Image (cartoon, rainbow, N blue to C red):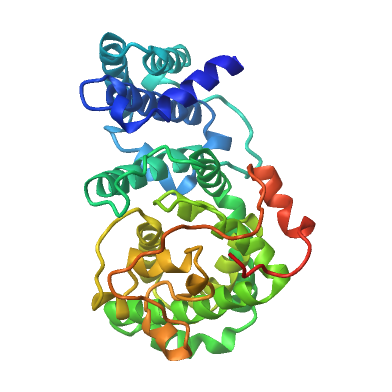
Length: 384
C-alpha cells in the first residue's frame, strides 16, 4: 500500500514537461479530484450527524445537489478512462476508478444517512470539499495563466503539509468557531447597556459598516501580527506560517492551530460585540477568506501605485521573503498605508523576493510543526 501511494504522489508531482495537454495527466488529475470529492460527499451524507456542517444544510437540501454528486462521479469515471488510454503510467486513472467504485458501493448519490447519534459535535467534511473545490477552481487557473513564477508547479514542495493544514481548519470548523467566538459571547452577555450604541452602528449604511469593519480589523491584525514577530515565544507559533518555501493560494492555510484561535478571537472580539449587522460580518468573513488566499497566491503583477494603498500579492510576498530586507515588514492585510503610518512598509519598485521562508530549521510534517513552538530554543533568527 505504501508503495502504491508513493507511485501516486510521484505521478502527481511529475515534472511539467511530462504532464502536458494530451499526456493524460490532466485527465487523471481531475478524475482523482472529482472521485475524492464525490467519495467524501457520499461519506458525509452517509454519516450526516458527525460529518456535515449545519450551515450547509441549505446546499444539501437543493434538489440538484445529489444530481451534482452523481455527475461528479460520472465525470471522474470518464476522465479516468481517458487517462488510462492516454497515459503510460496508470496510477492516476486507476486510483480515481477505485475511489469512485468505493463511493458507488457506499450508495453513491442516492446514499441514505445512517441513524447515528452526533452528540452535537461534527467535523465539516462537506465544508472541506466545498472549500477545496471553490478555492482551487478560483485560484489554480489564475496561478497558471497569470503566475509570478512560471516554473512553480501546482504540486510544489510541501503541498501535502499545506493541504493537511487546509483539511484541519475545515474539518474542525465547529471547534474553532466555538473557541474564537467565546470571548465575544461573554462580552455580549455582560454588556446589555451597550444596546443603544450597537443599534446606532447597525443603523449605518451597509457599505459604511463593511468599510469600518475592514479598517478596524486591519488595525487589530496589524498589531497582532507585529506582536507575533517581536515576542520570541509568540514567534514560535507564527514561524510555522513563515516556514513555507513556496507561495501559492494553499500556503496561506499553513498556520499553527493556537495562532488561528488567537487571531480569530482577537479580531472577532470588537467586530462581534459592537453591533455590526450579521450580513456585514458574513460578507467580511467570506471576503477575508478569499483575500488571504489571493495575497499568498502565485500571481504576478507589480502594481507599484496600487500596492501603496491596497494589499497585493507582491506586497504580501515581501512579508514572506527570505532576504534580510523582507524581515518584519508589511504586516497589514488590507491596507499598506497602515504600514506606512507605522514605518514597516516595504515595496521596492518592480521587485519581488528571490526566496521565501525563514532561516530557522522548522521540522517537516504537521506533528513536528505543532510541537515546534514549545521545543524551539533561543530567540528569533534574523540572519540569512
